Length: 80
Image (cartoon, rainbow, N blue to C red; front, side):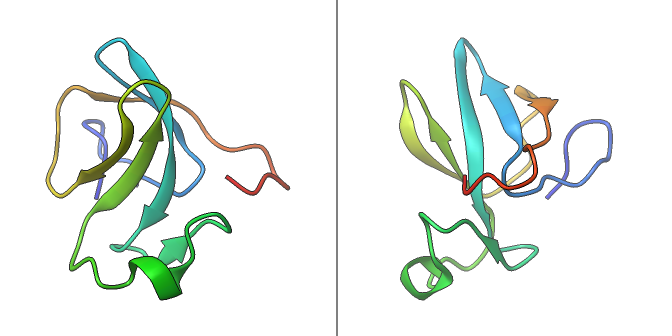
């Protein structure tokens, strides 16, 4: 899955959707899973990404959303 500019959405990315900010915690598309969201528990998802938002909680995104904005990449060594 990609952002509107064509760059790949990656686990650990900081994003915003509306007024809420969150972190990408897994990507079925790239087979990446953060330590808090292991593949063993989430591999049943057929496609998409999962984002943990501060207000919305966990949101499973299965298709391109033009309102999803990239804020920054994860800092090396973080688990989420």
